[in-house]
Length: 273
Image (cartoon, rainbow, N blue to C red; front, side):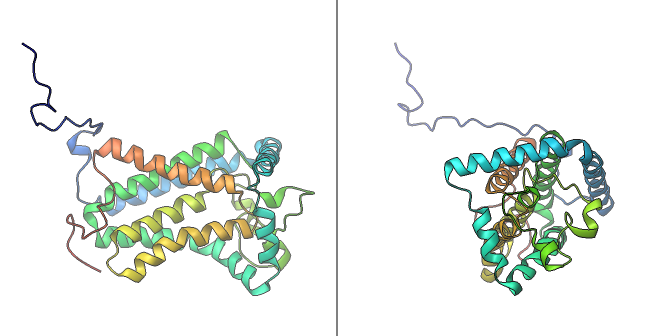
């Protein structure tokens, strides 16, 4: 006598689940203590410092990779960076504003969303923060193993370093502050990693519609700015998006739960603005 299959018996086939890989005690729902977050941030900055100190040894390889990326994009006809760079540079107030956008919002918006998340959504904080920190760590590994120069450092290709040309304080990789940053950390784009993370967090967790819309628009605006200022290739941005997606995947495997709820009222935390 043959046995009935689950489908024949009217049963729902079992779903395959991967994770959580961490034990329950290491994946609580409540937010961590503030000092723990400060230590994690300090460790990430220390890791970044290690990549920055290795910059001189990476210069030749970084420039070679940048030329290879540009050539590949030209072959695929997606090399829009030069056009965006020159069009934006032709409007003085626009490109100066983009220079300041590039220098300031990258850090301030990310920190602001982290603080907002910590205060307003403690039940989601650990998971969402873990995705961000994981993606950032992956990006640092990318910087160390695959140093890549930004378009503005490619001599003879026509790219304009808009910070230098317009004498604005607008980039950690141009002018007087260049010595404080890794100038060959273009691949993947952390500007895309962080802006997409902040945008998704606001889009999923904010209550007000206009805040959600701003969240959705923020990574798009950042993508435009990084091209206009000649700080990244399209390929760098795509790699940044992939890095963030991998960060969320690792977070899901570790905790066994999604970072964000469905696009409806968050049931894990009180209803707050």
